[in-house]
Length: 399
Image (cartoon, rainbow, N blue to C red; front, side, top):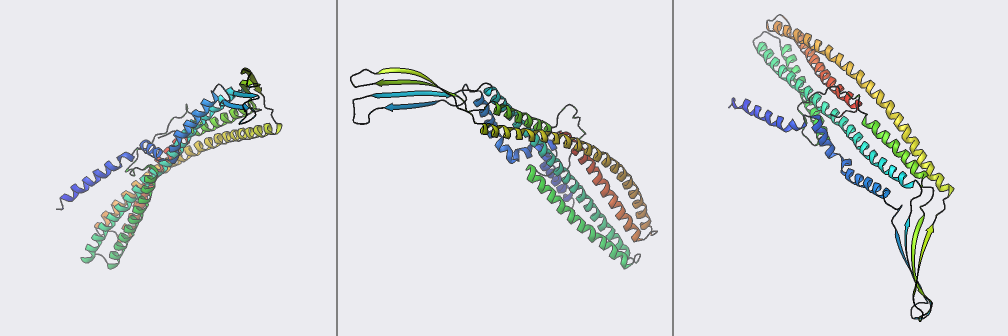
């Protein structure tokens, strides 16, 4: 029966790897998170709205035509006297330059929608990157804690054996047992942290948490504009287009109507037909013009300030991300050297303890030092990979 356990353990590990393989790619996780994002469900409707605005701006008239009917007579029960029937078909007309301005406004609105979608996807990519590396770090810490617990159990068993043989004092056995209990508590805490990180990942992507993540490489974004800059620029162009549309719409659109009148003066007289044209030109009010212009100017000023702010923040984000990556690389190299030195010292201490040339307190101290060095190097290795992801995020590059 014991020989079956390794086979079952390997099978379970294989199945868990197959279950998590779908989440080991940041790009696949981003696609899954995008599919779960609540705003994506509204994108089709927003696209349809933008298309409808473009269709309205391309229409031959400034609005839908209208049809009116009219009748003039002495009323019910009076067959004699004057009778008149009137039909009028009217349509609003574009003001000079108004249709071109509205078409530009509709096109800029569609561009804003597309740019906003790209910016939102990049923002979601940042959340996926952070959640993914949080899972990887939590799993690495959990694995270290489990290895510490296994090592503490082995040390406790060895110390108990030597205590029973009279080679070590009771206080040494108590210290070994305390070390095992501390390692056991640390492993439980690390497992709880990992579960929380996995739940956050699943809530974001709907996928199983990754067993590992392939580190990203620093992207070359020299020829591409940051999606947030693109969105801010599109918003500025849209504000400019709305200001032009406002200035081209100083008054309500004029209306051209075609009238057909059928009339008679008496019952004995024949019906006659009249055809007429009516042109209606609404007046504009200075107050309404100021209101429209002020609103459009305020939106343009806000969009201009926002674009300038996005430029400043983008430059600072890239500078900070590059500095963090350089620092993470230095810390990674330093902790790697520290890990190697601590591992060598621990091997020598274990050999000395086994030969009775060193006490348990020294061995436990070097065990703690080696654990700290392992944990520091593991964290810094993951922090370096996460720093590369943050730099790519600042550059505006998707996984």
